Image (tube, rainbow, N blue to C red):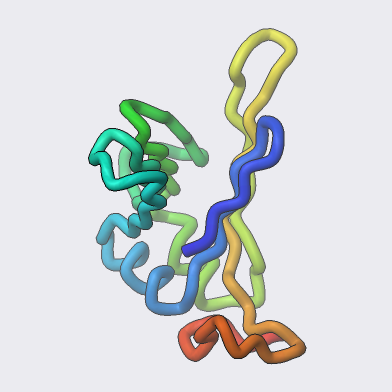
Length: 122
């Protein structure tokens, strides 16, 4: 899973295997270690939920969690739909953009990255 953060925007890219886990209601997580200290870890996760109707994100103690309505996950995986997108109000004049996308194979191969589990490029 890849995470891109830019301004008030979170963009996650999931492989086929990660998308399949999400459809099976398994939380998908990755971590970035900034030092050997257990305090210096950023963890980001995506999970499907039956209790929500739109994308929702929260952060707590260095853990980013994005919840996706379970009803949207299977159709996203089984169709040509590239992503699931929504905005979350932060304040009266600010919103957080949340996007969950399929991670496609690159048009030009990258030797440093295994793309065997990525979605085929459309």
